[in-house]
Image (cartoon, rainbow, N blue to C red; front, side):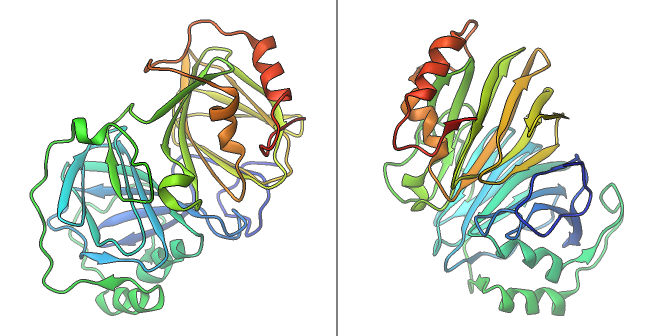
Length: 334
């Protein structure tokens, strides 16, 4: 296994560094695809979008089957769904279920978000709609979009445009955005909030679970302090993808250590044993999974907490025992 700037086209382990990926310019935004359907066994596509201060939101639309997400990592991102809107800042999250109309717009001079679309396949829209972008930054001047190309891609990927849409004014993110809905629904989530569990010296905050998206995908923010480690585990069915938000994280795959920093990502297909260890004072990453229920190890083996930070001290032996005792969850100590 090695670093790559080109996606392998198969569900194999790989590391992709910050700024790498399939890069396309569309409507002034640079979208880097860092995982596609072939890499995730059909589970989801993963992208990082960099945007300038947008003059307009993207056209209001909906998807018939895709689940859409935005995890803001820089700047300010206004997201609309239904008749509501919020301005997301770093750490805030939004999920929109199939059939719900939605849009987004960068409302800061420089905005970035990490997002997944499930199931996989729709992420190829950006390649069809945009132009290949080999630069490391955003264009400095106006660059008109290729409207016929975008319209053709919208038709191919069934982006359902909404006629005469209404763009609601943003409501400040607040108390109504501090919990996950009980069932399948679109929502906004304020940074730090979500279902929180402690395990192996880490804090896991679930921002999207099977309950909200009919089992399509699971997304959790994992964080821990220096030397916090998850022992080597393996999943029979679950595909995992880690996107590092900050800090330095070591991920060991089949005995080979890979060091990941902010903006780096690693693909971990089912059946591949891996372990993690925090190398910096702290580290934080988004763990996305599909195909199985391995992410529920945090709920079953972890301890529910009202805290918003990782534990100062842990009990590795007790945590390992809890992981060994797991039954009915797609997690095995390797």
